[in-house]
Length: 210
Image (cartoon, rainbow, N blue to C red; front, side, top):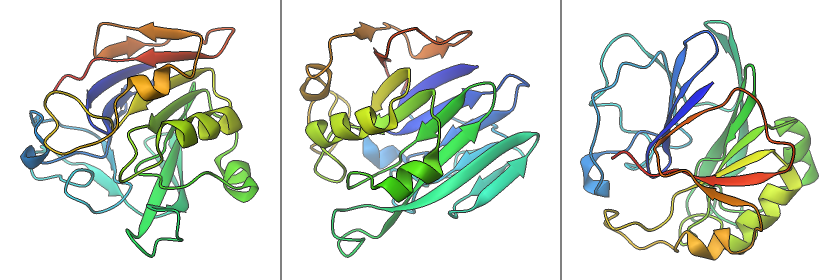
């Protein structure tokens, strides 16, 4: 499996059988470069401009934007309904956690705004690789993200949705999250190829491509 961090909450995930899955594409107002990609599947956790923009995409792709189970191109994907805030969606609406079940299980938490209850964790199931927002303001903050990561208990944790030099609005800094962990690797690349999982849980920080 290959994971490319585009920016913000957007990743391009290449499965073992070369299926290209794009998560939460953003528009140019976010501050990052927008890429003309040709994915097979697009996952959108919610409809906001920084998570559901498909205008630059090419080719014949399928958008998944509902909390249900899918089986496309030999890949099982399940969407779990959560919320964009800690008040049951009253402030910012709903959010979808997507779990891609391939050679490795990957969970993308979108703009999760609350810690997860047992029912959420049961539906999410086993996760090998966790893509998690850590910047607060519109999502869980660093401390809540730490609690969510520990509850899900993946082998690899990849933080997303935090303040960078290009992002045009305020979020919390990455370091507020990474300082809570002992095993942190800065990959110095926007690409991560995964052939096997580490024995001990590890946070891997990817550079953004955009």
